[in-house]
Amino acid sequence: MTDRCDRRWRLTLTLLAGAALAGPAQAATPRNALVMAWNIDAISTFDPAQIGEVVTSELIQNTCDALASFDPKDEARVVPALAERWEVAEDGRQITFHLRDKLVFPSGNPGTAQDLAWSMQRVVKLGFGNAATLTEYGFSKANVEQMISAPDERTLVMKLDKPYPTNLILQAIAANRVATMQDRKTLMANEVNGDLGNKYLATHTACVGPYRLRQWNSGESVVLEANENHWAGAPKLRRVIIRHVAEAGTQRLLLEKGDVDVARDLTPEDMQAIEKMPGITLARTLKPQLVYWGFNNAHPAFAQEKVRLAMRYLIDYEALGKTVMAYNGVPRASFVQLGAFGALDAKEGQPFSLDLARARQLLSEAGYPDGFEAGMIFSTLPYAAPIAQHIQANAAKVGVRLKLEQMANAQLFARHRGREFETVIAAWQTSIPDAQGNASRLIANPDNRAEAKLTQFPSWRHSFQSESANRIAAEALLERDEEKRAALYHQLQRDMMQSGPTAIMFQTVHLAGVRTSLKNWTWHGFGSYYDMAYKE
Image 1: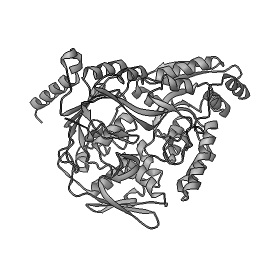
Image 2 (image 1 turned 90 degrees about the vertical axis):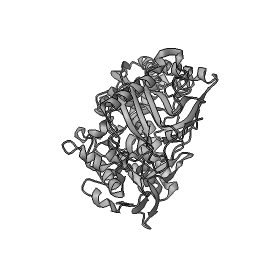
Image 3 (image 1 turned 135 degrees about the horizontal axis):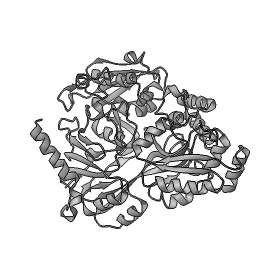
């Protein structure tokens, strides 16, 4: 593209993204674009081998197809995507995927099974956080080229070291970002010091999907452009423009004026107001995301199980659920989200209530009758500060003195992943509707050493490792009898509500304000499908 075209594009983007600042003159968003207001300050890369944030995960889903996908109409069902069909060996230790014909990257390069095998191998070889998605199922740098191979341009063979439940592998790997097809020629042409294109993917996408990343201005906006050669046909809306808007009140104003089609971070007060407004609807769906108060077990107080249990009794789940989280989530203390295989029901999965006397008793038994001091970091999400202040006030009543520190999401993620905190208000979203998804990250910790740097394991971030929890999680993973497998997860949930590394508080709700001019906004707990939306 010429410099002149680049300047023209930047001017167009500026006019679109900044239109709301002009006031009432902006009556509607472009007919061929989806315009969204969202807090996107957590974006740091678009490399599927490295990303972990909710925002970037959603963007990757809409720019990079995986082998399979979660059905837009049923999140528990896996349907074909890059692979049009697959076959499973009788012993359950090999899956053969047959890819669609004529897959094409936005660069014009053809997409082949060899590209896909290389892309999956690349995730393991780079060794970033998402490598754990594959390594926990037996793949390693030493064996990945033999275990994931492409005998021809349309066939990918995945061998497994153990007979894992097939549906779990389809959910955890085939429908995951680690099974997206990257443009090997483009990435290798932009390789820097053997990084397999990682630096290039910090600001680009290079994969087969309904959209491609057209532009990202950090802290300002993201623009996706439709892939005209997509195997499912080009999306109806040619562009998706996501404006970084951190303040919920500003998002609401933009939505009311018609300057955005969708607002993603509204407060309960905002939602209550716009729910009654003509031309706007509230879209809701339960997310597989848990909001928790996490404790760094390297802190001498939080190394004590009774202290961690005491913290759970400082939270008024019911009151927060009716106020701060009225639209944002439902009370949940179990590490397995509602709707997942192996989850405790709503009642058993949330047995706690505010009980300061019980908290004092536990603190005294743990050797902290006068309490202690600790820091709490939290993000700019609308519900984070009110929850932090609520906990701080209750903690002070039992002698626990919490120093609050709010920061941008990107900074919080860096501190959290680096174990540079004492307590944190954070959220974690699993990628599968199975208890294994969270058991393998929030609870199990294969290596608690600081040098292991298992940054994609919240259990590691919290310096938490339990031999018994690791054993139960490993046993449940390979249990073929579904009733026995569910019973193991039930036991683990009960155990962790008493001794786990976090006080899980809520399961969140996908909730957005959507203008009625945008049709067929489609999402569920495991995907948001921009390519299905349209305007009449």
